[in-house]
Length: 363
Image (tube, rainbow, N blue to C red; front, side, top):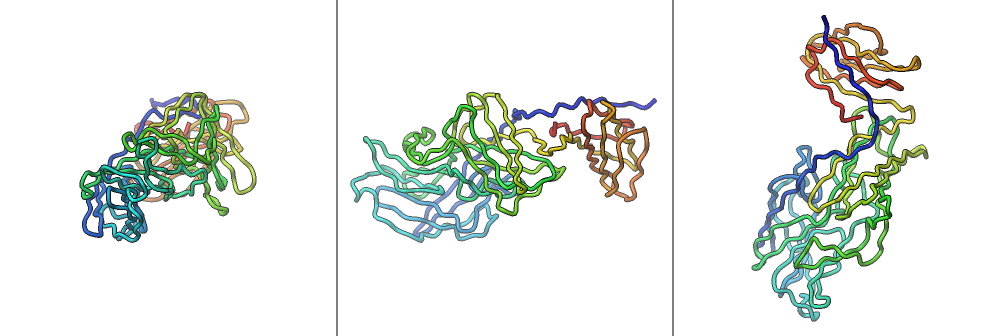
């Protein structure tokens, strides 16, 4: 007798519980150069395929100290996890402008005016961009902010001061942009400053906005049945009434999605969101990792109007329904089967001896 699994579909938007901690970046300084290496994962300006942080060609950091103010540019190539920064610009040390620093500060930011003392406290001005540029599998260049301190100006340890939201979308259109705002109109972007004694204490200063827009270019990013990730750099904020995203497509249509769940964004952390289906047809997707030479068709249960399509890993597809066997035309030991349906209450998967994993993250 064949075993089967009944899977009930619930196509709702939820926040995944898993949070990915972000590690520090370690650096050192030399005569006219700063030598930097990256340890751990999920840091700074760009992520590689392993979710490890890498330096980007042209990265610039600023160093401010008791007798020093200068900019340093990365000497290496995009994808390097270590390398040197060469001093490329100098400025008047802040203490000569009436400001004094008791140690050295290194800053990576898309916006930096200068460090100064305000009411006796040293502060740094930076910016959460209201418009951020899409990057594949990473947050946008120049959207992140990091700070490092050093007593001798030689060894620095960078820390992230912002958080990150990762959206996951499936569908059949091209994404032109994605807008994010809190349901209670929390401030999301603008110029902020933080006390050098407490880099996680952000104070909004100017050009504030209650939204962030991820620009995906006029050409757009094509969605498919495989989840596509979109990263946004967000400030430490509490969405006390949840938040809303609006996915805008190149054809002029949009797909709003909202959650009322409270979410507190903390610095140095990536917050993943469960996959959202943006298709107007309301298709639900399931992925099955299968091993063996053959697999039984999934059967859809629901109203009489239920339809479904099965895409097999060998390039063939079939309409869902009936207890049929599909034999693969290639010799691969395993395949990923994509099943999409409209109006189904659940799937029944027959022949489960060959099923190694059923991925429900898309529901």
